[in-house]
Every structure is written in C-alpha cells, then in structure tokens.
Image (cartoon, rainbow, N blue to C red; front, side, top):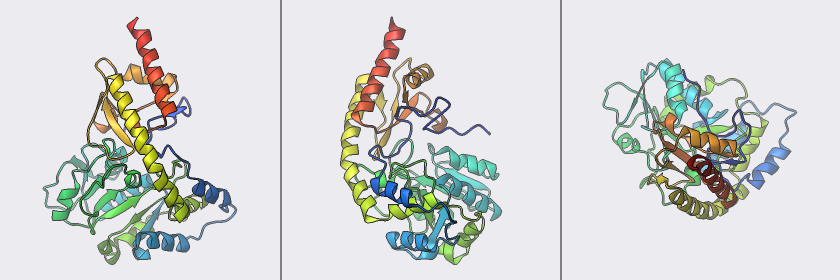
Length: 336
C-alpha cells in the first residue's frame, strides 16, 4: 500500500504559506484555545464521555446513544470499515475523487473498492463527502442514497461548517445515513485530533453503533480532544465561526482572481473554503517543488485522480501575494 498523501507539514517542516490544507485560515478559534488551555491533562477523561456525549447530542438535537466518539475522522473511517468487513460486507463504494483514507481503510479491511453509483445487490459501505474534497462541491453519490437506504452509508461532513456558498443539498442529509463530524478544520486547530459520528436510528436499534464503540480502545479521545469538542458546541465558537465566513468568502474571491492571473483554470462548483485548479501547460511537479522551497505549499491532486491539478485552501492576502511572488520567481528562472 502506498504511503498516504496529505497536506500540511512535511519533511521540510511547516510551510509558512500552506494552501495544502482546508483549515479555517481565520483561526485558531479563541474560545477553543481557552478551552485547551484549561484542559486537565493530569487525569483520565470520563471513559464514557458522559457530559461530552450529552453536549454533542443536544447540539445536534439527537438522542445521546446516537453519538459515537472517535480519535479522529480518519480513525473512524478505519474503524467502521473494519466493522463493515466483520459484518460480512465485501465492497466499499467511494466518490470518484475523494479523501484517500476511504480507499486505504477499505483495502486494509479487504473490501473491494469501486466508484460511482452502485448497482450490486449485496450490501456495501458507501462514502460521500459534502462539500466534497478536492472539488468543494456537491457529492454525486447522495441522490442515489435516498432511493437505496441502508445502514452503511456515511456522509463525511468535515467541511460543512466551512460552506461559503448556498447550501449544497436541497434536502438535509438522509436520515438513514451516518454523519461524520471533525470540527478541528472549522476551528483552525487541525493538530487537535478528535471527531464524532451521529449514528442513524437504525444503527442504534440494530446494535451497530454499540459494536462500533466496542471496537474502540479505552479513552479514544484525550483531554485536548474533549476540550476541543466541548468548545465546538459552545455559543462563543459558533459565533466566531459565523463571523469568519464573510472574510473567507472575500479571500476566496481574491484567490480565484489570482489563479486567473497565473493562467490556472479553476474547476467550477466549489461551495467551500477551498477549490481545485488545473495548472498551466508545462507546469507540474517541478513548479510545486520550487514553490515549496520558497515556503508555499499546494496540494497536488494526483492522489485524488486529478494529475496536473492542485487544491488550494483559502488563505489571507499576504499568503496569496507570497504565492504570486514564488510563481513569478519560478518562471523568471525558467524562462530566461
């Protein structure tokens, strides 16, 4: 299995101008930072996470047994894939372009992978993400879910809090689908690993949600993760998040204009704080390496099945200027 491809820090360290992740560039969220500073790391968390589970359930207006905590979204992806395989499923249905851990987890659990609409008769583990990464738009898998309900459909909502345009779906997520939430991106604190899923009622009634909890080790979420998720459902963090969206929307408009000046073709449909662009002819890995050497990192989309494309998280004007300068320096050196 190939090594996973991710944005963020790499062997060269932390990029000063990191377009390769989709974290909220207005962060970190002050309320979350206060909660982290006050976290008691000298003691174990409550192993049942009673107060946190109740707070998350109240925030989403669901019953507490529907909340399943996870060490991270990636950990949940691997855990539910393992449970699907143990439950007799043999296939995972993935977005055409999507987060690599869906396929990595499926392969590790010996689930066959396919993309597109599923026409098979046997039950399968279905993945969707909306806004979808790397394109940032509507996930084409969702319309088919309504016509074919099941208890193994998981909607990854990592970027839902960072929606900058109109609501992607005309209807709420299917009631029979799992919802996976990882708010560290929205809060600008991706280094704090914690997530949770909302199980559909059928998964609670059928015991799937409890079996998924039973597969987790003790204390999957540490004190920092508890603090992050607790802050996430608070009014201060939600107010701060709402205030950041107009700023991100303005930065995105400016960044789209920059890509046009660079001669990059932006793929349409992004509703979120990131988008994908096709590099100009003759640009590719050498350009990305040169930009990285100048402190600017973009996310190569080859691992998403989109060679010659990059995904760019929305960053402030200063970082956009740094990208422009680094791009200009690369072409100045190579066009002479």
